[in-house]
Length: 92
Image 1 (cartoon, rainbow, N blue to C red):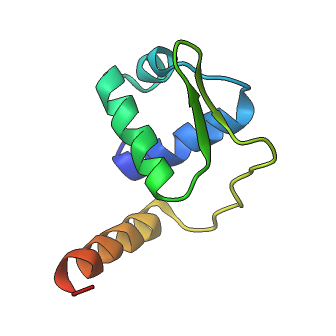
Image 2 (image 1 turned 180 degrees about the vertical axis):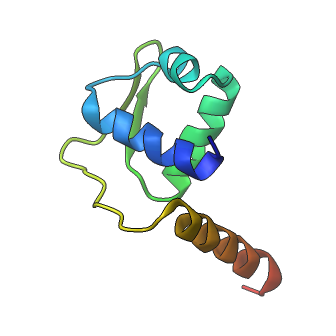
């Protein structure tokens, strides 16, 4: 599973559960706990309101739901790459 797909799947998993531990996400996606921390940080930077409580786990802010996305995996990847190119190749 590529990172974009995994990030979306993490948000869906957070929507479907009240609280999710980093260890549970790591086991589910077969990644390290450190990768879960990086993914959660990336989601936060993208504007997803994730609450974290030490020793408990992660949850989405009450009332937040990801709107349905109608992009294919290839389209989503292309948009992500295009955004990174613009970020790195243009000035502020």
